Length: 566
Image 1 (tube, rainbow, N blue to C red):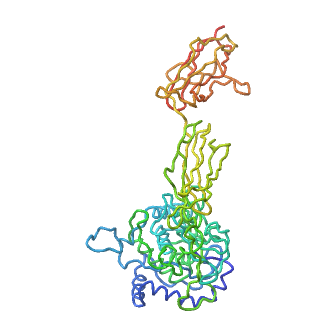
Image 2: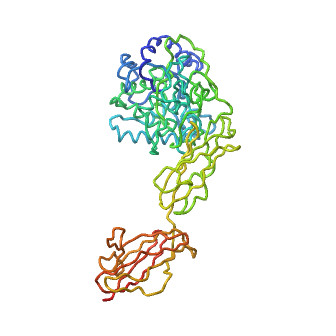
Image 3: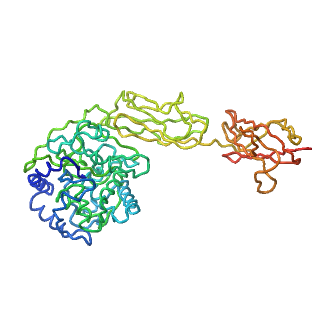
């Protein structure tokens, strides 16, 4: 967990000696005993990434100059498992023998993609940093077990909140609420949030939009990975240099054990990884925010309301699970934290389709639907869900509204009210929000109606004297596959003759609202597929001219002859 910076620094430093003893005892337990820990650490320290010298970092850097934005010491909560003591290779290479290295080298697809994209983006944005995606993977492994084995939605948002311990001054530092509970669901104290474990105040500074959905969400692995990368690259660090690499990792959590653990996974992932399906990644066994079955010092699954996130889509480190000032030696007893109410809303789920379309002037036949459930998956009745239309189209709920509130039914579902498509084609988003649950987004589009046939309803000749108006206004019926095409758009242009006609510069014209001549207009048919062109005026050039009508969508065309006489 990235360090929390600020007013708790001096107090935390005062308790550092006692905490070191606690850290070491916890790490030894995670490895299964003192002897195993000694052998494993010795082997790992001797087999790190190519070109990395594993000397102890200068201790003078622990509390100064190692973190962007401030000083601070902290030995935060994290998963203590170490990688297998052999190089990873894809599963299946030794089918008769269990391969822990192969299993541990598997990274969930969406999580892996987020790490790689963040590293690519940072190579362009911060070219001197040299961040490798394997470093993000190592930190993600230690902080949350790769978002609990890749338990994320298609857009990269964690399906359930990943929360660090409550920072209430008990086992860990006391950090009063800084976000009104927006991200961590706790309006009294802060908690680290998301797959990269950011404290809300740290996220406020370093939060990023890694997937381009316009939202910075620490619960989304794309956002979290990019923010973590920026955090690690801060202060002009070049991560291909050992000292800068160590300082970057220590800025995330100022603990020697944490540094060694992250470097061990970094080297392991650099030896080889492979992609596994989301939700099938190896889960941590030690207490921590990525293991809901272990409720030790690092568990974030026992406290408070679920955090906000979604959609669009993980965050980067914030420091907050630093032991409180004066922490004694040995393993402290966890301070009690509230458990979620079994009947409280814990998750907002999509029901049915995520994409919808309707033609201009019509209504959406299908509508976004969501379900609110408890942490046990049971439906919750009576939760207010807000549906909001976001975009530049004319789509509206009734009464020209862009928001609507619906309460969940007995089965926990809420369906958006009917949506009028409006007269403007284009894409927009329907966002569903409920309390502080992870929001959901639905893609919607108002499409241009097609017409493959244009027919003039009258048959009188279109003639006028120079300088006069044509007496007959042109009426056209649009159709598609033989049926009327309501609201289909048609472009009418005065054109020249030839194989490739162009807009004419002389001859008959329409008149715009300002009274100026124009020779191209676009109109939309009514609900019966019928449209009437504006009046046409002849200029002072006699002759025969062409009026061409084209369907904006669907391929229908019609050419009419206009005669101007002296």
